Image (tube, rainbow, N blue to C red; front, side, top):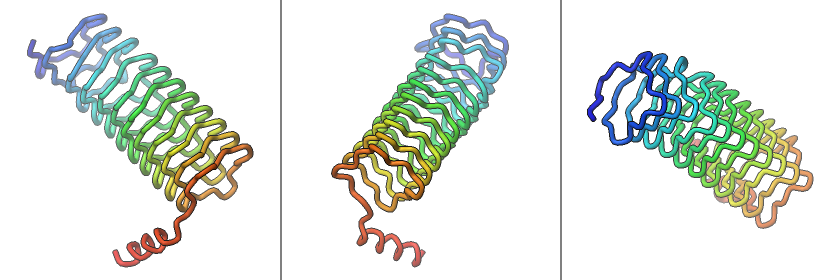
Length: 239
């Protein structure tokens, strides 16, 4: 079915299977999408704040530049979908599946991500400050320059993730798995890393002033590389 440009405002689509439909619209205000299944839909710029989204399945969808502050997407399947630059402050994503999703530049301040499955998430420059992301799975995530300050990341799985230039200041990372993660130039001042796994992590120029590292494992971690640091400084001074 071709649903390009269709007006779905206030539409009742609970439980509807729209997989395979060609859907491109930003007019979904107030739509009831509970349990609906959408694949490869284009909802760029949509206002989802008044939509009912419980149990919705959005797979490989474009939901970029959306307005979704405070929406509930708990336990929803959002795999391979892009919410780039979306406004999702305070959104409830507990237990959601965001595998291979894209959140670059998105605003998720204060969002709830506890137990979310977000392996391979691409979220550079995203604002994830003060999120509750206990037990989240961010294995292989791309979080370069992301803001995770004051976030709750207890027992989070963040192994092999890219966290260069990320902000982790004041974050709670108790028992988090950061093995093989790259934290080059990350700001982890005052971070609580007690019993965290930092084995084989790259800690080049990572700021750890005031961080709590009691019980943390740092076996084979790569600390600041002076030659690399000089090269970085030279590049900075010549650009």
